[in-house]
Length: 439
Image (cartoon, rainbow, N blue to C red; front, side):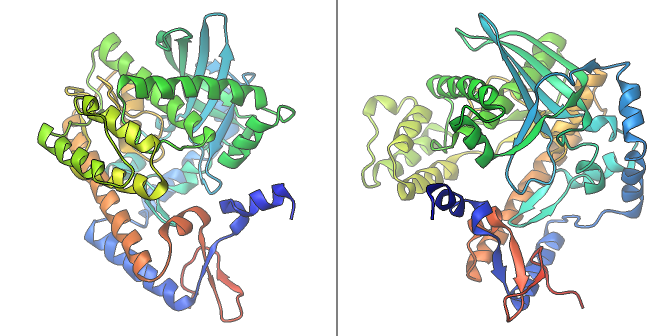
């Protein structure tokens, strides 16, 4: 086997889906249904929501052509998406340019509120759902796939409506020279998986190599600056593709909430993360120092986020998991609020909110509406509480489902990354989604 073939065989794409039999498929379905009932997770969309979604996908090309009169035409700008191999919709895309003293970074987000807005059936359903729920190999969408996977997905070689965050970022300080947020029409050149992104970074002869190398250079600097500033980085060994997406989305979210708070002074759905008490941090740090091979300098105890970052940098995978658990045990839950008071402790941002995932999070959908309309829903406080509660329920359901997978002998990580299929006694695939065979 060649080195390339061996490397591919080790990826999620190369290993293929996890195989289960029909009986186990039924057990998994029963468990999901129990969790849906317990946490009021809506697995099926009402007919009126599906009907509205289908209607909004009619005449797409003509509608986009009409919208060009009111939007920036960015179709000639080199643009691409980077997502997991099994992603069903692509809600963010990147473009980048290097200038003498700045970088220009464009983060293009699917313009979901062009199709989903207050008064629509899909908006009311999104409020009820709160977010997309991701169980390993089973997704419960916030928006109907008929919409989310078509006109709201930034697929390659198609014109799409977007909400673009254009940032001029200073090379010396990485701070904002300028921020411009506007409606646009984009044309994605290519859809990359994370593995493909890594390949493009490695091979200078491949398309988009220069663009990915440039955006990684910026993202790497942003990542190091965040750590230096005291941002908690619980997963220090992320590959370059993940670093690009994480840092660019963080920067865009920061730009939008900076604009809303300081330039407009409006309420929005801010993400607030309280800090642990000194006693809680003390407990976590003591637990970490008791692990084999981990030491924290006494001078670092006054800066616990940096202390944890240092410990994680030198930890092996098993110790890394224990450090992460020790920290997460004492971390208060982040929540959505209509003002940013208190900031985001883990990220060490004074102001932070979500904007880059309107297909899967109610908070981002609402912030898109606020940015464009410069107006705030009357029930914003209730919407903040709703989004916080639904996220908590989704995370709890995901944790319980992963526990159940382990109890029945399945690896949740493998199922999540490779998908799942139901096979018969002869190894023939009965259902590619891992569902019980149809009666």
